[in-house]
Image 1 (cartoon, rainbow, N blue to C red):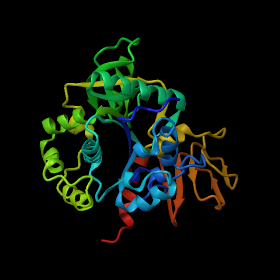
Image 2 (cartoon, rainbow, N blue to C red; image 1 turned 180 degrees about the vertical axis):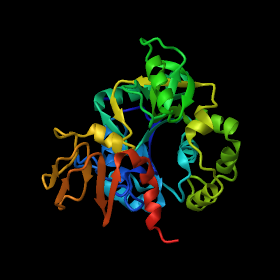
Image 3 (cartoon, rainbow, N blue to C red; image 1 turned 90 degrees about the vertical axis):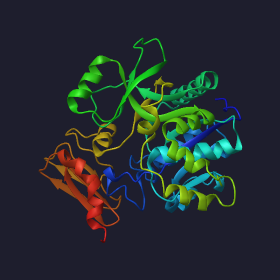
Length: 356
């Protein structure tokens, strides 16, 4: 597959904690650095290898927390050290993307950015890369803000949705009408039945100058922070970023820009996708036994138990007897047993063990 042109850059967002996967994903070792699906590689390693087929290492950037720099270097030694953009605090995707956009634009005002999450499951790599290249070609000619959507296969409440302006299925790229975050079950079903909506993958493509113009229009405070006495691409960058992040609001790019801009398009992706954001999504992706249980080791025995998830260290022997719909997960001496109907509470569990 051909490499992208020299003005194209890829930004991998790797700043989240994945607390809905606690204790397997935690502050010390978030989901993106873990091999939750037992493929032999972490999510971020797979993401890097996939995108490295079309981007050279010097034009791939990873934005992550300062505390994960060593982990990022260890898992992706090919990446130049300067291409790890370190966030002092988590401030959501708008700030993360702004950091990368203003930095890259400072070096190359003609730059085009592809932004991808680090912790999603992708199948059919060839279709994925072809879609991304088609999206980059569209933005190069047309401009605007392009996101990638996936045709829903069910009425999912855990995903964001993108409403297309044009329902013509022969069109791969169409203008966007609305964005909706995680609808309730009734709304999700209406979205699914209408055929007007796509799942929001959190993949974005645009020219740096276009997204900077949008920041200036819709998030002027953020634009001013990055644009005033800018020290990006200088020895003072770290101190500058600490100062900027200390004043930034926690806001997503969808809320800050995508929902407000009048120049947004969506490409219908042809690849398999899941954000693997919950144990429910993990269960859907994994191979199951005859009773719907998901395990990853022959040291785990389930008797008279159905629809359970057991995710423990490889050396653990586990017997589960006579229970249904449980999530049993262990890591770093933390053991969690939770009913699957209560999994929305998992993201709060880690706080229970933090010292006040």
